[in-house]
Length: 154
Image (cartoon, rainbow, N blue to C red):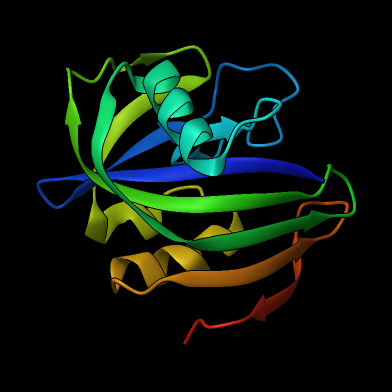
């Protein structure tokens, strides 16, 4: 099981979203997600968050908050534990060029209209309502959500 981070950077009623359209053999291909990625050996969740956000956006987060855990289980892909964050301040200018896709600021009330993982809409509703998240999402071999275990979602 791999460990990853996922961050939704907030500004002016919008989240910075990454449309994953550039990477080969990408389990997120065509989907809209936040920024983040895999832990490197010896990294903490916070170190991974800061590094991945910098690598994908060019900015250094100065205000961020841990929001919970998402367990992503799949009959097709490697299982992962995702450490979820939101951020509302950073230093630098966001580079809208990313080697994994296209970055865009999306109005929060339009986020759920994007092509998301089915389970992402569940935890994004919690983030949009300013609630923390603890959830397990189990997908089948066709990437269809087959089980949701909400540890604290409403």
